[in-house]
Amino acid sequence: MTKRIMLITVLLLAAILFFQGCATLTNLAGSLAQLQRLKFKLGSVEGFSLAGIPLSHKASLSDFSVQDGLKLAQLFGSKKLPVEFILNVVAINPNDGSSGKVKTTATLSGLAARLLVDGQPTVYGDIDSPVEIPGTGQETIIPLLLTLDLYEFFGNQGLDRLLQLALAIGGKNGSSARLALDIQPRVMTPLGEIKYPERLTIIDKEFR
Image (cartoon, rainbow, N blue to C red; front, side):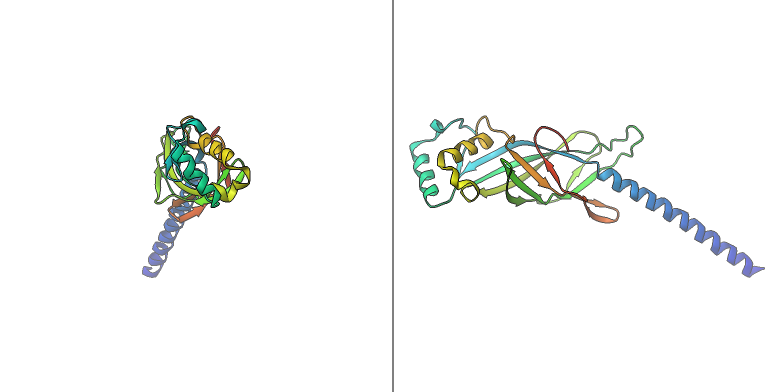
C-alpha cells in the first residue's frame, strides 16, 4: 500500500512538473515572438566631423574656411577623407500590454549593422553595450558611433561631390535620408541571446 502511495505521489509530481514545463515553454515561445516585433528606423545624425572639422554649422561649400579647404585638398590628394558621426537608431517595442499583448521589456544586445551611403555598402558598426527597450510603445534612441573614409568608397567622385555628400548627411541642414543600415538585431531572452532570422534594411522614412 505504501509503495502504491509513493508511486502515485511520484506520478503526480511528474505530471505537475510536466505541465509547468509546458507552460514555461509556452511563455518563452510567446516572449520570443514578441521580441521579434521590435521596429527600427533611422533618426538624426549628430556630431559629424570631416577630417576633424565639425559640419553642424556648415550649410554649403562657402562655409569652409581657406584653411579648411587646404587641409581637405591635401587629404584628398593623399587619398584620405575620414569622417566620424553618431547615427541615431530609433526603436519601438510595441509589447505595451494593450490588445492582449504581454507588456515586455526587450534587451537589445547587438545590431551587427552595416552602413549604406547612397545604397553603397561601407563600414560595419555595433552598439557598445546592451540597450533596454521598454514595452511602452514609445521611441528609444540608440546612438551608433560610425567612422569611415569617404575617399575609400567614393573617391572617384571628386572632392567637391564628397564635400556635398558630407554636408547632406552631417551639415547644418543634413539628415539621414541618404543613409540606410543593414542590421541583424540580437536580443536577450530567458533562453539566452537570439539573432533575428533575417537581416533588415532600415531607413529614415518608416519603421521596419
